[in-house]
Length: 618
Image (cartoon, rainbow, N blue to C red):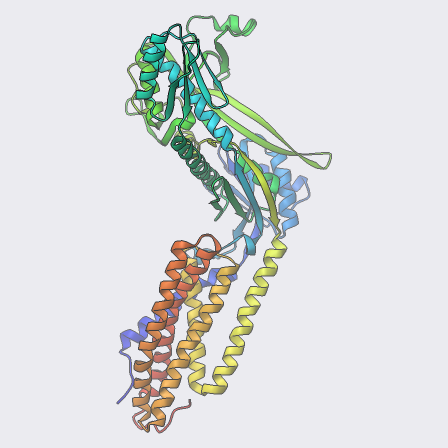
């Protein structure tokens, strides 16, 4: 009896290990501290931008390692973090408002590896350093905004049904509508109860004919849940668009959100990222008053004076038809008639109804789209970082209403398809539904992250060396085969995590250490089975075959049960626990491959072809 694998099987194992080595290799190259410039609307990065960046850095006495230009950004690499931070301040001041400047860590992977799709793993906050925020969602503000919307809905409902009322007010969660008589109050109560089911309506009682409405408890719960979920979506979209790799944005408790930005060391800049929002307002144009007179004197009552992108003044009604928080989706495209860039907007049900009513009643009149962006800017004044906020409002589109709008329509008047795409992205990111307050703020420095990496790496290396000494001394040649199989297991695990672009954290490194221990345990089982067969007096070739076959069932059973536990951790856990579970599950699969196939292939090559094998070095 001989122990041989067919040629194709040996080649397949060899190819798997070689590919694993290629895709694990980028993790050895490290990262450069870098500054990333992303152009804002109406701007683009080109060769002149690179020259301007280089000149400003040179004037400030900074020498970058490399300045790279891609389709959408400029990336400036530096040799150390100090130069990176200084350059970020210089570029934020020098490049003005046309660019977003963000700190980054750019991988130094060679071009030929990148061309193969090989990328290093992302490192989590505990390894890479970064900022951690705990945000408290202002639920009272979310409820007040909802009550304001319902107040406006009640006004519209009564007006559309020609029910006369004296006034509508809101105080401490109660919307009170006063009528001239009890008949109108009763009619309005029935109508509000029927149309606005999220409200609890009752007659106010007393001498005054009035109806009081409150938001129901079920609706309040939905508003709170929606506020947190929508804020998480907004924050995630906004952070992703600004190029922060692998952020962690997740809910904690009922009213809080955890935001972790790995690689971001500038807390003020991180706050700018979190505060950056954009939204739209839809307003009717004012065709009754003279714009020039409004410029010279003041805007008439019920109107506001705006400017479009070319600086032309435009007079719009003060009343807002709807705002960006009623936009559920936005995508860019081309207008079918003119071929111009357009953004296709989808509204929620209440927004669609309101838009349909307004456009039906104002056909032939102009309607404007006002773009609003709240910006937070940090500048260094007298050596101190000062953060200021400002609101940018501009009219991006004025169109004549031709027909009643549905829940989906398009916005034109944009300068380019790039601008349409950016606006769609910003609208999808949306505005925060409710304000958030930072209740906890922590910064993890890159030095601490490096220390964690070094400690985690050294613990794995020392453990590997200890295992190697034990296995070689106790199992001799078979121990050496086990160590080679173990090394291939680590290689394949790192390659798999790199291919998945997983985020490695300290729990993930603990998962790697645990996987190494479990993988060597499988080889110990195999070696002990072979020893048992030798003690029974079987031939060495038969012992090898029987040892692997008998050990496989035990290895399979133990790994399957651990795999089930890993899946449970992944499904029920969150954050670092899920990271640990991912490493554990992948490590189990790679350890089975390496312990059973790789070590068997090595044993086959060493002993499998010897017909007169007398003994085994085990």
